Every structure is written in C-alpha cells, then in structure tokens.
Length: 234
Image (cartoon, rainbow, N blue to C red; front, side):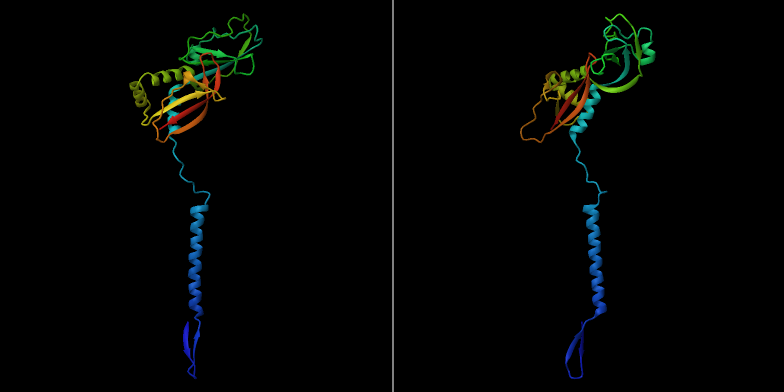
C-alpha cells in the first residue's frame, strides 16, 4: 500500500498493484510446486513401494533345490493298452537319454495308451510296467528334461530333519539357513501326508511366517501328484 496526502491534508492509501501481483505469482508458484511433489510422491503409478522380503520364499527355494532332480521325460504310445507295451531294449538308453534307470506310468496321462517314461539315476534300472503285455506295437514321442520334486528325496530330507537335534543343526548348516523352519506336504483337500512332513514347534510369543505352495511330486511308481507344500519359519 502507498500512503498519499492531498492538498486538504487528507490521507489516502493506494494499492501497489505491481507488488501485489508479484506476491500472488510467488504463492501460485509455491502451490504448483507443492501439487507436483504430491503427485510424484503419492500418485505416481511408476513409483513402486519396496516389497517385503519373505523368509519362507527363500527357504522354499532351498528346500525345492534339495528335494528335486532333473528328470528326462519320454512318452510312448501303444496301440492297444490291454495287449501292447513299449520296448526300449533296442535303444542305447545311456547314449540317448543319459541313463538306463527309469520308471514309467500311464496314470496321469489322461490316455491309457500313453506312457510317460522318467529317466534318472535316482530310479532303479528300468523295466516297462506293462511288460506283461506280449505285443509290442508302439511309437515313441519327443524326449525332454524337467526338474521335478522326487518323493524319495522328500523322505530323505524328512528323515535327516527328524533324526536328532544334531542332525537338524547339521541340516540347517548344509542348507545355509540361519533361522528355524519346518514343513509339511498336504493333499489338495488339506489332508496332511505324515511321512512327508516334520512337526517342529515354534517357541511361544515369537513371530512366525507360514506359506503354502502348490507343487508337483513324482513318486517311485511314476505317478505325478499335485500337492501343497507348507513352510513355516521363525
């Protein structure tokens, strides 16, 4: 405001429009910058919040690594499931598939004519499960490899876990785990599979994490089953 006295001695005030406009410009600029900062910090879809690290996820990777095996998979289609069987005797299995140890099954194929043959040194020397069928009318499919959880390796881990406190401590060292953990396998209907499970109780009043994972397990009959792996950490 500008103070001005006229000839009669009266005092009047004139607004300084230039100064007022300058103040308004500064205020608007500050407000604009504040809005931009708010959008960047709170509304920006490209700014991702830091995800919480799951100890159970880390332990799951370690456990899966120790109970799984790379398995060769070959399919065989027979003409008549009641009379025919596949025959691998004329093939050098070691040269073609890396081993002559295999198991097979047509349980999970959805077609009784189709057999899935699983190759791995963890299995016994192979003999077709349909060998009682005398005819040999069949075709072999494409060979591939896949890492699969093996039923017998889960049993080995459970046995090592349950042997003693010393073996449990040794297992933690072997798996490079700092905290405590337990695990169990369940059918999809949530029924527990006792021989594939351990049951170590966590101390009262301590934070515990529990997570479920859907997995596939290959048993020693060649059957692949969908199961739930539950891991608890504290």
